[in-house]
Image 1 (cartoon, rainbow, N blue to C red):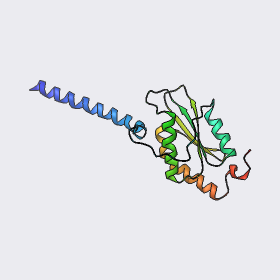
Image 2: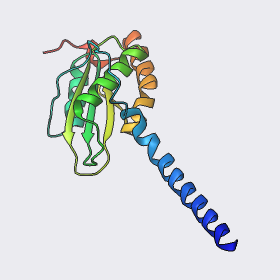
Image 3: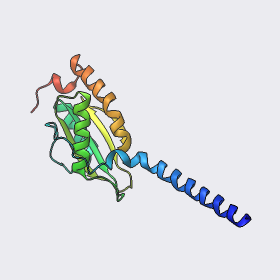
Image 4: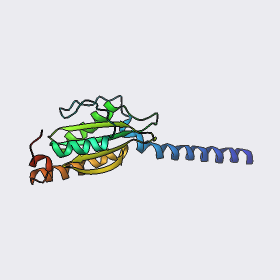
Length: 162
């Protein structure tokens, strides 16, 4: 009888540890792991641009052009979504949140495991955010962008683009 109690206790603890570990990892990947579901095409997406420093490229772009520039530093972890998937998901998120101006993406390959995103407009940066947190930051970034746009507070609207 005691042996049966030990086995049940161990099995319960092992299951609890396994479920806890799965719950800890799931929030980081769930929002990006829905690859089976098609992403609607949004007109604000751009081609994949690999650059040496995505933050500098996005910041400079945001000073000269309206819209939101997104800098993505791709991580090396094997579950990192493709640049196309990141672009498509974030473009839909921005469109859903109310961005009607272009959303341009700049990618660079990072040498760390985690992927990081930062949003730029008018020369200012929101972020950086982990990839999972970047989707949660889209509505606040959109609200700030739209407020500044409506009140003429964007550098990119004050000067003509070259």
